[in-house]
Length: 381
Ligand SMILES: NC(=O)c1ccc[n+]([C@@H]2O[C@H](COP(=O)([O-])OP(=O)(O)OC[C@H]3O[C@@H](n4cnc5c(N)ncnc54)[C@H](O)[C@@H]3O)[C@@H](O)[C@H]2O)c1
Image (cartoon, rainbow, N blue to C red; front, side, top):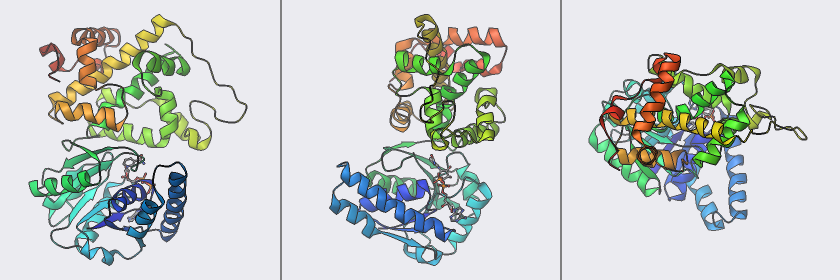
């Protein structure tokens, strides 16, 4: 099968590796010829590292390299059966790419976007044949993260969903299906992990090291919210939050945090720039966690209640199935448990009581409990 990728950045290159390892020939196009050269050099390095670490064999690395072709000529995409766009997160730029693609590809070619937060329906509206357009959302790094969200636009035909699902499953990925709504599943449901942590930090309820410790100690998360956003990059994480918040008509549940905005403004983007919430320069000492068990549990339970509320709302609003929600959060962001199973174990009544307590303290709609949590005793999972 001939696959096309538009954009040779972090995601485009990763997706190309996944497709080419599965023996599909893959063309990568980028508007910037230098980006193509960089992508090719980076792939060479990455494959060498993965061979050294025993992750892939030399033969597999050769297969990947042999199956990928870099091009600055879009007309070469005429024989593609699926094209995945992974360019900058800009609606107008994406719409233009889809328009250009339609002039080149066959009538049966599926056109997909890897957008993290834009409307697939809006992207599809740029096409003569919007029924062939779909969201296929990989997670970073695409080679390692097993989850892919499949997002039909309201125009997408069933056949497009079926064929896309078959192709991505053949690449060895775990698939969940999401409604075309801001943040899809993972980028919507995970927002309170960051936002509520930042709010407690801004209010001085606890320091960042204490909040990180609490989430790892009592929640079993691999990283705390401050460590994780330093790792993701504040530019990337803040942009997703702001986009989801504005796309939900400024719902206070998704409100971005000034402490993170200031980091972005200062260029303190996290690990990649040497400084974010923490300072990664050599010899620097970072704040220590205050390991107060009562405070730690309170922090963890507040963030967990907010996460459960968001998960419940995704179910209530028919964004995805209960099973897909659990898969998305454990495979897309490595949560130690699915949030619905966690809700059952933690207690739905307890969750509502924490939310109601926060609502009466702040009088902020951010803390409104999802109606579903007031209706059910447990999730059917
Ligand atoms: N980085 C992540 O963590 C992540 C995760 C999931 C999804 N995404 C989404 O994937 C997409 C790409 O993200 P990325 O991190 O790989 O970006 P990136 O900045 O690393 O790469 C984007 C590439 O697209 C190229 N490009 C820009 N405009 C183009 C055009 N009109 N035609 C062809 N090429 C063009 C750029 O030259 C660049 O090489 C975005 O929509 C992003 O939201 C990103």
